[in-house]
Amino acid sequence: MVIVLKNSASEKQIDELMNWLQGFDVKTNLVHGIHSNIIGLIGDTTRIDMESVQAKEIVEAVKRVQEPYKNANRRFHPDDTVIEVAGRKIGGGTLNVIAGPCSVECEEQIITTAIAVKEAGATMLRGGAFKPRTSPYAFQGLGKEGIDLLIQARKVTGLPIVTEIMDLSDIDLFADVDVVQVGARNMQNFTLLKALGRCDKPVLLKRGLSSTLQELLMSAEYIMSEGNSKVILCERGIRTFEPATRNTLDISAVPLLRQKTHLPIVIDPSHATGIASLVEPMSLCAVAAGCDALEIEVHNDPKNAWSDGAQSLTPAQFAETMKKIRAMAEFCGKPLDIN
Image (cartoon, rainbow, N blue to C red; front, top):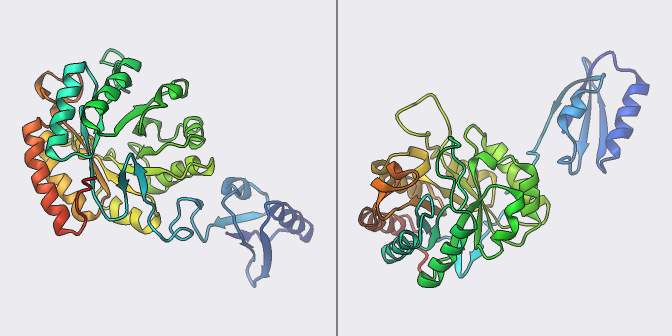
């Protein structure tokens, strides 16, 4: 971190500022220039709030030399993180496909869909038990019953289950869930993130609707700073001015995140586009870009789905899409995880 001081700063004010900064266990180096004085900080500056420094009367500007996230930063962890989920490995050179309905509706629906996606090659099962919906009158999910049905589907298929948590008060209900998903709307629910950081369970963290990549990584840092390093990042589309799709899928996020972090990266083409016919081409693009996993919505009867039917593939469509995904993955040297 570099702090540029105002020309009006007195020696006493500078000494007070440097003593305050040294309280964060960093070394300070004062450089006297012709036009201004600069304080350089050496050490871990991630705990120093830039806004608090900027608010000091004698400070002209503050600049970070390195990113404010440490645990998620590739500079400190050059090797890719591989997260094991019931025998599957997310990261490390293989591709996983997480598939299933937007919402768990009933036993027949989730079991039928789970069997179908497994036969097509899916490696994990997704399904919403708690559903954050824009309208308070829309289906909100089955809650605990939905989790119980997912667990039942896991017994039938052997697929690990991924489902979304919405509220900290429900955390005990996720004890038997393999991967806890944090949705876009909760990406900056820091109380929830810190609680998940104290759990020894993989967390799939989705990018917020209007969040930058750094904000996504800082949310991952909240989880990791509490001791849980099992964080999986998910690009699920961001809100732009383009109304033709539900969101705009930021494919460039994959190689950019790969440079910035060691954490595994998932692409959700279903929520990104909101259109079933676009799921396949976007999935192929994501694999080519180097993602570690895809999260695809599949429903046994999309026309009558209780939520997000327009973006859900039928089992037959998913099976055809998986053939192309498998071929693309092989071509890119990242074969499907078939454990």
